[in-house]
Amino acid sequence: MVYWGLEFTNASRTIIFLNISPFVVALGAQRFIPGEQLRMIQVVALSGGFAGVVVAFSESANYTSYRILIGDGMPAVAAVAAVFIDG
Image (cartoon, rainbow, N blue to C red; front, side):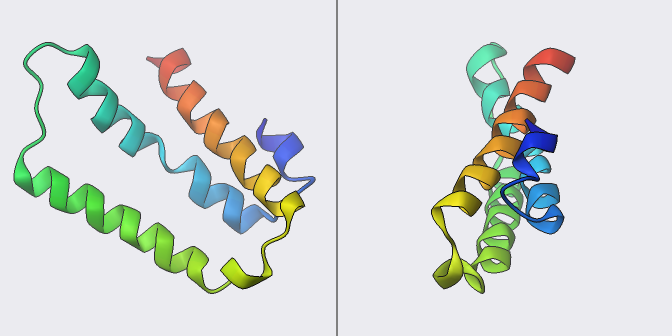
């Protein structure tokens, strides 16, 4: 998915989407590990990280084409899949 996604988007956007794995792990842990809960500081940190991703993409949001959205989705799927495969 990563290499195919690079046909549609640029490498800098791909790297950012590949680094969403910590979000997936943190949120998935609450669902799949009994008794696991995020503390307030962890929620704040994850929110700050997610806000950083939003800010990073806000500059090019007006110039996003359908092709780039496809390319952005592919590394995001790869990041989620890597969490479950490496698990």
